[in-house]
Amino acid sequence: MLVDHHCHLDFPEFAPDLDGVVSRAKAAGVATMVTISTRIRKFDQILAVAERFDDVYCSVGTHPHNADEERGIPTSEIIALSRHPKVVAIGEAGLDYYYKNGSPEAQAEGFRAHIAAARETGLPLEIHTRDADADTLALLEDEHKNGAFPAVLHCYTGGRDLALRAVELGLYVSFSGVISFKKTEALQDIAREVPLDRILVETDAPFLAPVPYRGKTNEPAYVVHTAAALARIRGVSEAEIARATTDNFFRLYTKAKRPQENGAVAS
Image (cartoon, rainbow, N blue to C red):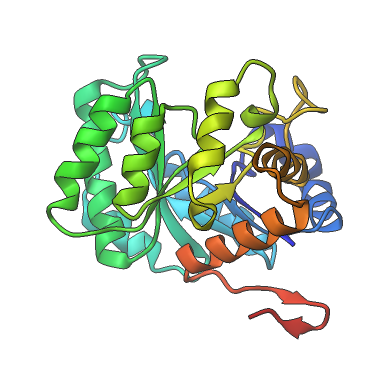
């Protein structure tokens, strides 16, 4: 069994065949999916997707690209929306300086508001960070002084220092299909070094499809290939990666219900 803790099933790429996308994931052994919010003001749309399928959950949050658009949304509103039974995570939020969508000030404000929501609710924060390692780490360390909070660095493509320091702060690190690409040796080295009990796998679908589907529309079923790449990189079996990453997910996402395996509730 595998989990795709970060995909975007509300995106238009999936609208024509959403039932098929979820069915293919199930057939591939992906038992649980979390569809991730990028705009709080469109939360009803993502919630509708989660409510449509038994083992699909969602988050609530504002992507850093939309930080200016949704600037000023209070932590209390994020917390209130997170009380829905299908909401198992906060975010995604964080810092992204690559595309320069969203001012750094609005991104940082939103990031802190989401951290506060994660701290208050105990729900994990899905952190988006790109080309912002130093500022992300500084903000995480500063916020950690106010109390620990559960979180994962999603679709990790940053450097070694941020990944390992985040683990020291109690965070998890998630790898996407990027680790299956050529010329990602530095990222693969990080994937070997992060402790196995702090690793997750994801698709970030519809983006970043892993080999052998690179360049095509990604979907949750393809997390199987990311897990296989991670197993090769770490020199362990695919079964071990599946077991560890699934256990890690349910340890972190405490609100998600673990589905049955072989007719019995998995421990």
